[in-house]
Length: 109
Image (cartoon, rainbow, N blue to C red; front, side, top):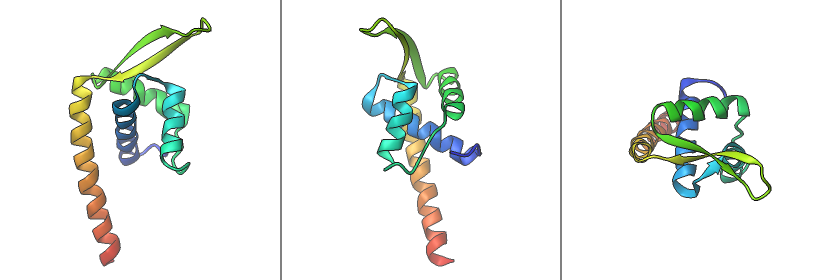
């Protein structure tokens, strides 16, 4: 995904939505979840994903913790906070309104 405000906001929405359904998830699982859920249309690079995760954590929308897997490897997993659930609702409503407006422009242009 390109680094524009609109797409960055979309990335935040995608991360929050995936975490609302499948948490806890580590970064790679979030990347593959976006790819799979979008029918392989959307791809997120590590260089975009991890800064977004840090930003969402700083905003209090997600929380992270280190876990140790059965194989002894440590992994950082992310979960949605209550504040993140509230933000997800706002972001979904905004996305619905924006996508409806874009649809109108495309139909009328």
